[in-house]
Image 1: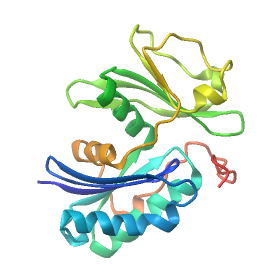
Image 2: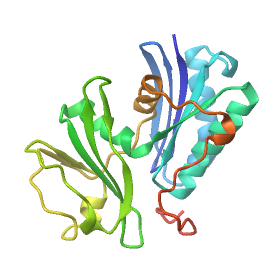
Image 3: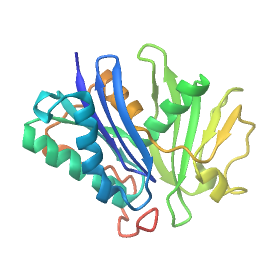
Length: 222
């Protein structure tokens, strides 16, 4: 039975979860600019509720981005530090994939385009499609001007993320079956994705995936 700790701070939430087989204990708090102050205490609280120590885990998964540069560094740094202390591997998971998976699990729409404001007149985006064999949403993450976002050529799809609101009129037109502009990546979903895919690496390789090379400007102003 896999035991995975998931940490997600790529957007406005401080989200922590522990997966034990089919059981999940999670805490998901909207805490913009407060994740650094709260994440370790939330990790401790979650471990206590699960009656586990770090040494009993199999891996630590974290939201590797794209997203807030500060948030990505928090999740990666905490995951690395905890993993080093307990000699555990880490599992980086795309934060956009986590959002797409959450939307699929709540709507059963198999095509989800996630777009979040990347500042500099660009969006981080990914067009995700359900892989029926694994039950996971699969896609690639990109950063581009809003007009370059590609919609799936299918009748049933969802559009998610603040990019659709911030750049309304610049994004491609479409008629989605579902649309929502406020969906934070959830550590409970992240942990489930991590348990179902390959990707565990040594702690030293658990780094954020910024997508954009220009990392001096934080995507949320932090």
